[in-house]
Image (cartoon, rainbow, N blue to C red; front, side, top):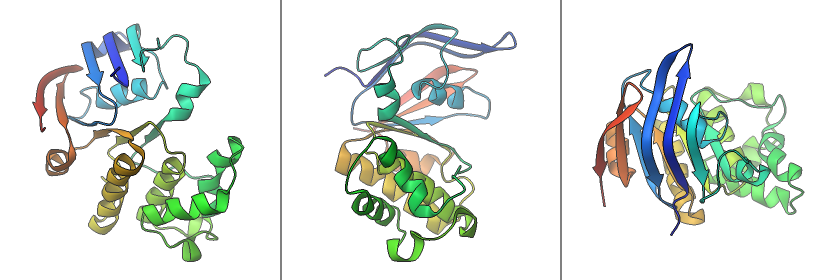
Length: 220
């Protein structure tokens, strides 16, 4: 099976400083890959490349064998990134989760939104009508995750998604991400300093230093 992501000689630099240098990396479809390492080692840069939010200065990122240069819109519809600080539209919870569905012209929006809220542990009857400013930090992060899971992405990229959450909210985010893999076959790439979480859920953990992958652990 063709890997979901393939990086070949991917190199990136900011202000003349090399921040990422990966000779080759393959991420299989349906896998869970963890990224660990000190701050500034290139983890977030790698995630942004996988999300096609930035291109490498040289080299290539492929999605299902397609070259990164073309960057077709359908790729962006299948890959989504959740960062540490949730970004929500200044609208209701329902409107936030439904936004992507409406852009795509999908039907049965209410049913899909409610199912996605339930997946992240939020009761639709309680939360759907709430405004974005009425949410706690943990609730906002779960709404942000629900707005991504409702699209059933092929790849969910998580950049320290639980770092600022209390343990109860963090567990709900972790559980929902795992459910996405179980229910939809979503490929997960997780940046986290929580090695216990990564070791319990990942197929592979990549340890990074100074923009390079220096160690790879397999959990098969």
